[in-house]
Length: 189
Image (cartoon, rainbow, N blue to C red):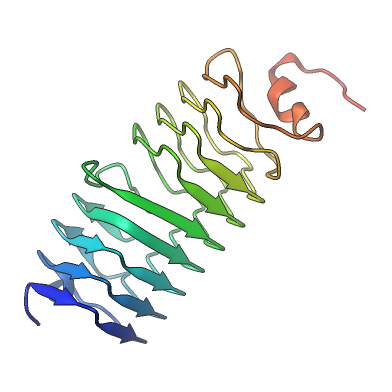
């Protein structure tokens, strides 16, 4: 496999370390692929789609994700903190992100649609204008997080302390107010 792959479709492939290491993929589609044994290091994905792929516990170091869409993928226990933050943008739809880590990442205008995000770490991340559409945010950590203009209005099970996070003009539903007031130990009916 060359170091630069364009407009390829990979389906049902179990990727090994050597299949991806130091490669650049552009306009590629990955369907039902398994990346669990891979350590991503210095790879680039541009305008790529990942559908029903398994990244569970995959190591991701210095990966560049530019206009990448993940649909129905499993990212349980993946640490995104080392992704390349220059010219990057990626979104998640119907994904499992439980126990994933986004520590200190700039995730402005990201979309998380219908995702399970149990115990995700957003500590010190910038989520400005991000959208959490119908996501389960149970035990997700928001500490020193910037979530100005973020939309949590359809998500649930979150606990966000407004005193230690920036939430200016963030959107919440009436049902979600309980998650903003939890630290006060109030009874809300």
